[in-house]
Image 1 (cartoon, rainbow, N blue to C red):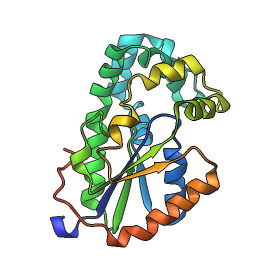
Image 2: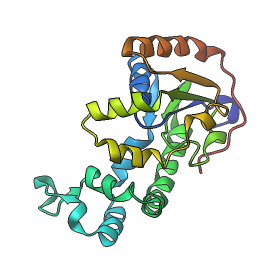
Image 3: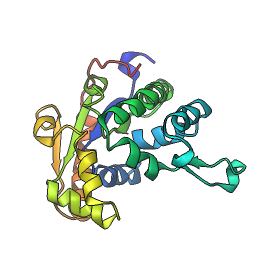
Image 4: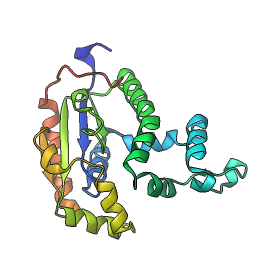
Length: 214
């Protein structure tokens, strides 16, 4: 695909509990193509070579029984997250396995797309040094207390959530590196209005000379 015909690439990021997924859901409901890095990454957890590497490192304790997997079990994402995100070293290990595969998928999607715009939900956009891969970047931001309250409502442990936050760059740094900051300490209706407002801007956004994902 030539540079001038490629889709407009929109990166959407935000720390855990910020509401970036809800924002992306509003975009998708309005007809935009949204690709979630987490969804793509989770799909690769069952790749045979990835699964084998994770079991070798963490044992079969990270598996959940599954009738669909001939009794061998599938990766339990919650157990894996508890193990990995409590350690910087283990977080880096998991990322080293999964991130290259996610980036390959991203690049393939871009090259095969006929969309005018593609939206990528990438929690670790800056942490993975992907800022030069997008024409336009949005940060969904919310206060620490708001994010923790949302996570607790979802049944997540507050202490574990705080541990995961340690692996994410704070909004105070990110907000100076994005094109748009959406403050999301309010309700879903307010976030929906922000999504609609952004959608109206898309035809006027300009392409940049972006770096390929791979």
